[in-house]
Image (cartoon, one colour):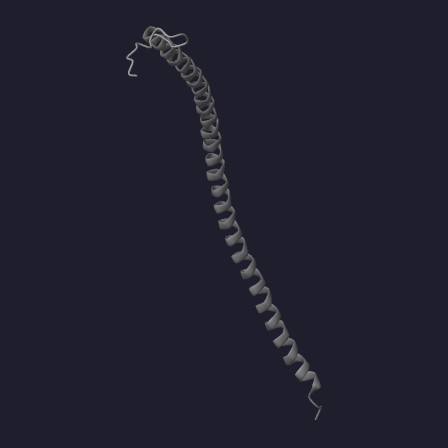
Length: 117
């Protein structure tokens, strides 16, 4: 039994217009959701840009402080180096003076220890 029947008018089957309307409503819902996601993404991007600006400002301030600190360290190293050289020279002079005094005292002591003849 071959029966060719047009099934468009059966109960519960949508018409082509109803299918197009349903497809349009799905597309509208997707578009609304996409717009909502886009707004949220824009807010996130604005927050990230603001955070980046704050970080760049902080980085610039830190780099300035680092440069100042490195300059202070360099100056202190030069002063410390100069001071340590000066200190070593002073200690060396004192040592040399003590050695000379010691030699002089040894000579005097040897004169006193010699037997009297």
